Length: 288
Image (cartoon, rainbow, N blue to C red; front, side):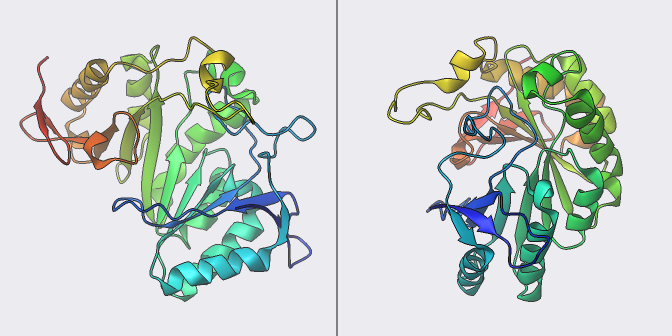
């Protein structure tokens, strides 16, 4: 179900939308509320937007925010966590805060995803939600503006500022980094120096999304948009993380690796004290 949000208060935006999803997976059983406007247009993202309004995720419908509130209350009654994602929730500060206040009022569990472009709004969110899941800069400084189709201030400087102020956030913080075939150790090392000591760090293998052109389920949008962005091999990701932990031992208990789809527990790996990568259903000993 894809809907626009129509505000019940004057300062509520009428250009957001939400989609609801309740995955039947043990690790991801939650209500997902997707707000449909983004200030980036990343080349690997399957949320293209439409031609007339490229910031809006396509195929959305206008509905009152009361509908979103109703879905949230039903999820809370079933004790589901609520994940507010996007798009970019910080572009809808009032709507997101309104929903977070409802969730907190009923002692629910809330997660907010963000690209990190609005650090001071995120600080407000941190006072209401349980987890902030934030993207660090999505690529190195030389590539990122062209990659995100956003000004350097928005896609590089602001996310770095978010990392620096995240130590003041009142909730649990997760920093997410997607790694590509061109990702270098120096870039991850740079990010590590800016990640707050209280944050968890998820390093995820880039996976192209397939079939997001209407009427063409076999078309691979991501590869066509930029063939230079491809998945980094699993062994190389393990090598990068191994070297990070070797240089920064405090990371060992705070770092998670996702190889392939994050929907399956077998694809989630953590590093043990003996430098073994352990997933939910298998054990892989790292060999340097």
